[in-house]
Length: 152
Image 1 (cartoon, helix red, strand yellow):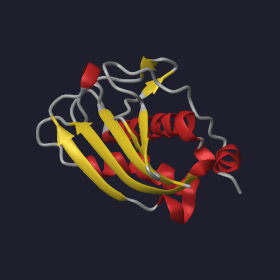
Image 2 (cartoon, helix red, strand yellow):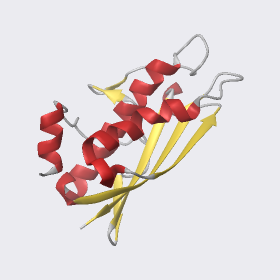
Image 3 (cartoon, helix red, strand yellow):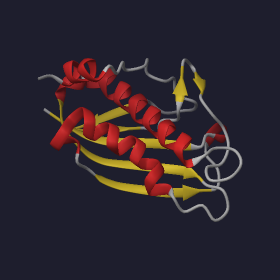
Image 4 (tube, one colour):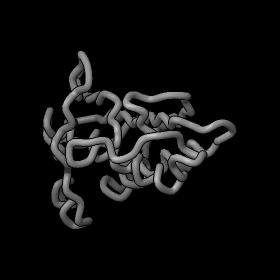
C-alpha cells in the first residue's frame, strides 16, 4: 500500500506546504535523506494557536493536537519535494514546546507528532526523537516539529 493510500484510509488530507517565514526552504534533500525545516501548527494559512503550553494559554492536550498539525505540515513539505510515497522510514523527530514555568510534559506533547507518524507509516514510522522545552518559538507558536526521513 502506498503512503498516500494509507492517508486516505485514515481520512487524513495533507495540507498545502506552509510558506517559509524567513530565509529558508521547507525541506532539503541530501542523498537519501530529507530534512524538513521546523514546522509550526499552521492550518488554513494561519497559526492555529499561540502561547505557552502547560499554563493558562495552551493545555497539554491541545498542544498534542498542535504537534500533530506540525507533523502533517512537515509531511506536506516532504511530499512537495520528493513525493510522500518515496519515504522508506521516519528517521528522527525533533519537537520544540514553548513551555510555561515548571511545565515538563514535553514528551507527551510531541507524542502528537510521533503517534501520527506511527499510524501512517507503521513500523517505518518508528523513529529517534528529541522533545525540548523552550521559552519562545516563532510567532508565539506553542509547538514546532521537524523531521528527518529516509527516501528511496
